[in-house]
Length: 313
Length: 313
Image (cartoon, rainbow over all chains, first blue to last red; front, side, top):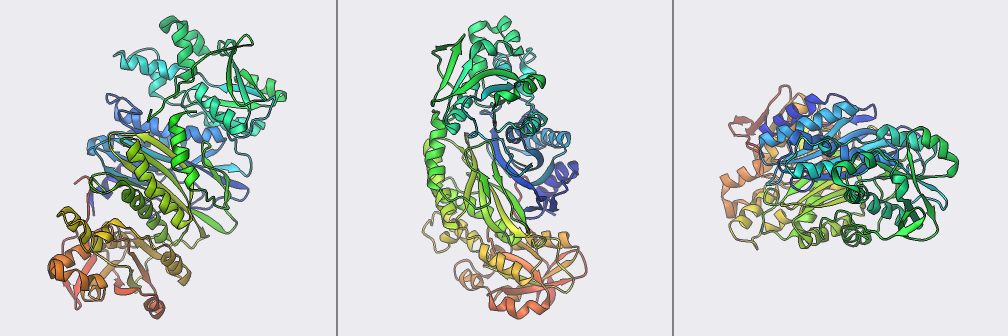
């Protein structure tokens, strides 16, 4: 038997024994086959993490592996989907890198009860992890970027800027800094996404490129203006935690443009207001006619550069 | 609007306008959503191609892009599935590489009427293309690696060794060599896979790692011995074409272990024999009790090293 396949079996298949009830042809064949239950749709997304781009070269590879899977799962959270399977493609410099990345990937699959339904392992000059995630959702109920309505309220579930702060500490050599755990550990808000969908929320995304840039995606997707009120962001825990270390201005910058927050940004009818407060969501703004993102301070538009992460700038 | 997203939209979404009838949430959201028709299952597979590993550094990147998509589609052919969507993750050194890879990917999607249902684009020190392919199949009809039965005949649809010969010519500097087109152009046998499935074939894979190694996968998957008769391989066109250039021994070596053939290797009940001959399949051997791959010459077992490609040997 070929060593490559032995390695894959040992590192992955044997360690993630869970199979989803829908799966009729399992990992190890040319493809996996799934019987979607009546009344449900399948939800699929793909996401790549590359060493030195998405994670620092000095980050342990098991942490990078866990981050890659959790970041991909966050896209399912944004749709309100129930996670079911991942298909994994790992590019590794050597066997040791492969084993380390696999440790974090396996732990994450086990933690979320997700089937490792397929995979591909290859050598590459650059360590990289591609994760395709799949899940189920009741027909017609997916939360999308295009479903915001005029007069919807804008909400946030989760914190902002903490991951950016952790990255900053890591890069400055403070690898035990207070915020580093927020950078190392991505927590996809899967249960919260399902909860929002069940409450009737229709427009949602997960904040991965920075609040302002991602608000822009909802704004263009839904053909509305999105007004974010800065003073409402000051109710977030992050706004209490960041300024003592980074000052007011830098803290706000990290909260608006930081990236990798994986908070859920969504809009909802005003009638859901009290229910959303009850589950810990933060009301941060308002959808109005127009086609722009406006940042406001006590109702006055303030000038602010939208400056998310651009891979090919 | 962010440059990265503009580039993705321009390079991909606008150029692959086709959407599959099942798709209810399209490319551009956090995930795509698909409503699988009653009576069908979904089939998913993921495959990665890395520059300098899966294609030579001097191969034009549009060719590499087309190869990556076609290689992934070949896994659907092996299941007998109808292709429907791909989700694409490209890692590119620079914008020019991204644009070139995208050209080949877009052309391939258009050629097969496949929806580009989602994607992720990232910078990387290494050009790489990950393709997740999805398709539909009537419930319970997928061809698998585990379904061979004792006394099944072993069949091959497609040629062997031509891609390996093309790679050899390319590597020796003969980039206009006779066999180079077989290496550059991967032709997934999608229609043939569907045809085999409809004929009642149950056990199939696509030959990507070399005939002997892939026969080993069927043998272990189905708990049978697979006997391949060398003299029957001599009915393949490749056995006519290769020896004049490479000699008998090297030609056989390329046919047995070459890799990237993307021929369909399958087993079938003897009652299908004449139907399979009619569609151009080659009868190359026999399933018997046991657990090994045997190469035979006029019925006598011959000793031969199984020597497929191992990424981490």
